[in-house]
Length: 70
Picture 1 (tube, rainbow, N blue to C red):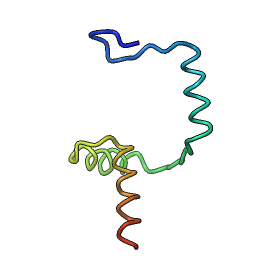
Picture 2 (cartoon, rainbow, N blue to C red; picture 1 turned 120 degrees about the vertical axis):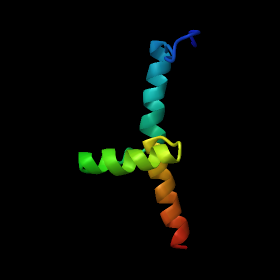
Picture 3 (cartoon, rainbow, N blue to C red; picture 1 turned 135 degrees about the vertical axis):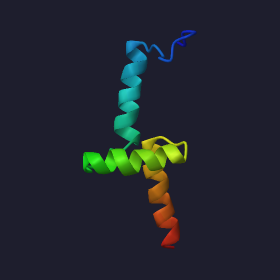
C-alpha cells in the first residue's frame, strides 16, 4: 500500500512473511567487512559519483571483474 507523501510502503504481516520466505529461498547474503574509513571515503563516494547505491556499485564492480577476466 502506497501512502501519498510518504516514502515508506506499508506491508501486511502476510506480505512481510512472503518477503522473508522469498529472501531465504532466492537470495544469498554476502557478508563484507571493510574499514569504515575506506567505506566512507572510497566506496560511498565512488557509488555517489556514478549515481548508484552502494549495493549496485558493488554488484557492478563484481560483474565488471568477471567480464574483464573472460
